[in-house]
Length: 424
Image (cartoon, rainbow, N blue to C red):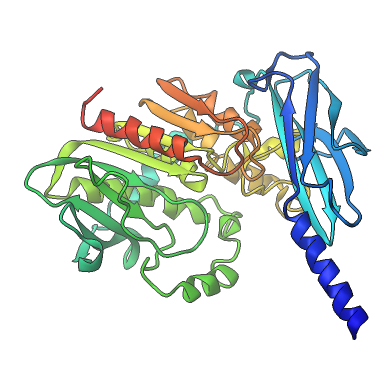
């Protein structure tokens, strides 16, 4: 018994110490940007492992993101450099260092950009792309909005009134739900449509703009109320909405995102029907899946004045067919290709790929992301970003992954507020 207790205590202590281990990886260019054929050297530093009482195995791998590694090896020292090689085509080269011990793994990475501004998409633009979406929106607008608004007193305050809202989308009795905040004062105000990242979850009022006299509509996309118990959303994610980005991909007319994309336009219709909307100044804003929907909405709806997009998903989905990373949800990667690599799926995806919407964006936009994103690969979203010819501002925080730092969040809120309130 004593031996067992001692062993358990030592294992607990080792796990606790292991949790303090950190791996930092950087590139020898401070901005992590390189020219083609220029060599990159990765530096690493492992801290917190000096007093670790137990085995720690450290390995590295270098390769293009989401592709098989070009170089692998074992690391013996806690600090050093690794020759990373180069790239002969625009893209991203990533060094990932993994420390394994106590049944756990810690990770550090750095991703070098090789002429990212020259990355070109692999997806093709369908000849009937514009007419397909014009018809889809026209058909959706045959269904009246029939908007319903119910105040949520517990979320309202002296600055804003908050409402649970819903309206019909592209089929009778098929509704979209969201949470609306309206300045609690007399006047007419600009608005921001907030489109969501991936997942199934409840939504509350967004208070980012409550000091800016701006209306916000925090929108859900799944056609279910956004104020239900969390357990229900978890159940839906495991059952009827499991892998929803793959649903009905065999038909471009019934693919899951069709009702989502036209629903974003119907959400703008809803905003234009609000008594307190000023009738002209509306922006769209989102990250990840929401970053994709923001670009899509700006391309489909000429009433959008400004666009904010963080690390957009659904970009250049066919990248995997060209031996490079494709966008989330990775429909054509090695795991999913056996199911979806048929020509009909590839053709249908072109109507939903954000790259093809980016070609039609005409409004100023603010974009932000990092190079270490493993969910939405930078190669994929630069494929879309490089297609945008409208005015665009880009804030890169190179070390970040699929997350937004407070300074990025503050910058994008400030950028939108200044333009909507004409303070610039």
